[in-house]
Image (cartoon, rainbow, N blue to C red; front, side):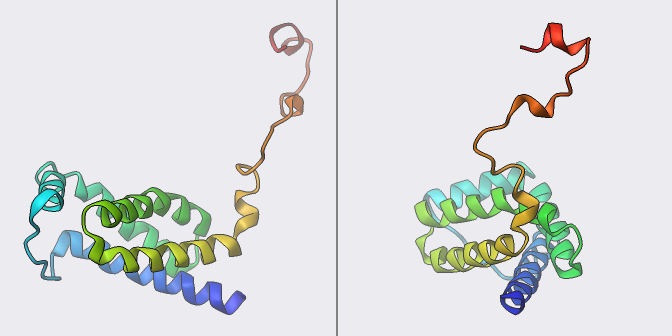
Length: 141
């Protein structure tokens, strides 16, 4: 499993570095989009909303390749991947298989570092996390 997660981490890192750089350098030719997908991407591009998204992709991809702060990189890429999936599911279905591959890679890498997410995956948090002192006894109930 370690080899699979390492390969998945490198592949996902390369994918997001490539597309993150493409957002700034535009070396990948893109066909003109029509319909609602074209309007959506046009609005994102004209508002410069894509710049921080591409920066997040680039930084997270570099972190994945360098094997540093992998849980942070996965946390940054999670919302980006969800938006990629929904874009392809609702507006441009041709890219849906590629989005599914990225989701699979994310899940494989996340599974390998699942202990880092143990704290946020608790169903219920006890009040034991708040230290009981003479000052907090009166205010915390």
